Length: 394
Image (cartoon, rainbow, N blue to C red; front, side, top):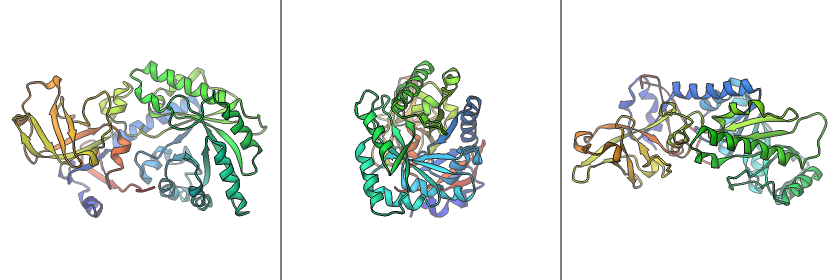
């Protein structure tokens, strides 16, 4: 068993530098400020909010993202995440969850069971999924009628149907005619917004998101009594959601979704929409060796602890205390610290020593967090105040 999982509570009240390495360090003040900022934007726009629980998969973070019941919907990518959030239903602060993958048959029995406690919405982007729902419903009269989001592809080409596809109106018509499902709304995720490098670029992607789901909704026969929901968002476009002030349709319910925003990471900093100080996550590593002949050092945080995600910022992890130094190469448990041109002339033997603890920013918080069994939650002074154990598995 992981050492942290067995002993994490013993580090409460101690400085982060005392933690075992590698460790996942989460700044609670930064996390709370990031969440509050988005909550204020949503409030000012008077739109709905559905946080994604994919980044920090824990009850504590999910509760905070929901504002202790101010917002009452989530989106999750795994069954484990949904089950992990069920205590919030008992607390009376969570009403609804969207299962964020296009639905597949083997998930349905699990979702039926979960739906006894929590309203479950499904995601669809193919008529075969509606057939699967109908076949499943035929197997038992107790199977629920499913409300579904139609997934729209607005440029990321990961999942969803493009508005230009002749299959989109056919899908909507199939859902409307189905005894097993009905349309709840239209959903898109602009994953390609991670490539934005300016606020203006992110605003352009957000505008395309809104236009995309509105256009897709035109395939739906309007119904009396409830507005169709159009759900947009990604963390980069969520950072500029205030730009929607003059473009929110009044005949629809606009919903924002985002997941990475509580933590941010190097990839988010590269968009130009957040600063290094808005990164809530660091990985504590330890120097294992120093190599003056090649001006590099070895740390015990490699691919498994950091992930091999990249961005326009060089390396796989940056050292905030030593500008210009980054993890430039990795193996499974080995990370190689090297220097870039901005710190040319800096000597490794004058910067690092064996046994030295080093903080590292990560490239992609979601992937990095998945590798760690415990989140060590620190205050402004980097003292451990809490330890949170995340949900693991699918």
